[in-house]
Image (cartoon, rainbow, N blue to C red; front, top):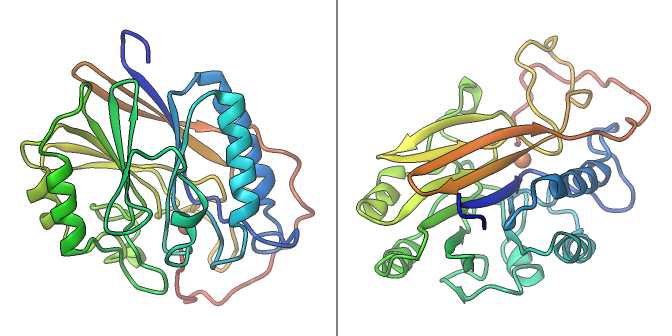
Length: 277
Ligand SMILES: [Fe+2]
């Protein structure tokens, strides 16, 4: 952390697949994730956050991902902090990552970290095969207790499901359920910002007075003007750079230099296929 504050790099929704499979037949998500981690070096982060959907549909990628993230920790000289998304089965992230955590909450993926005076709290918002994310009463009680003592340079929350709605109407109700309960816990705390993913579309908002950043995804992002029925994959890969300093919180989307795409193979899908982000 410089005198001006901490720098965090946020990757979200990597959607890694096993056995060399390509996401939707065309997206090499391992290549995109590796490229994003390599590009992160330019920003000399104090920590890298991975905000869920590490795997795609629960594919068994966690030991290989732990190797990749461990290598990034060594090369970047900072921790890689991971929370699960709705594609990550319960327990998978808690068992594979966050070896340097200071404490855990009711779920193994509820973790506390301190990076150069900035506290980072990762929260498991569940949601595997569920419509929305959620925080349990036990998690909220635990979070309230942790936040009783302020951190030297404040706190940032990392969680998959945003406590704000998406621009896309088909994603209504797919974020964090009952965000008001979280807002009540955070009122008066030292939380400086909330970092999320899940929507595969960047956005910002607030929960009470606390800024919320929804990062664009590493794997793919929604193209609001794509022909109906077409699949994503040619869109760029993105991560975010977060700055947390005295009196400031900023988030900047950064386009990743993308390796050569797999051979294009457009597969039409029914226009009304249910979204699984
Ligand atoms: Fe996702």
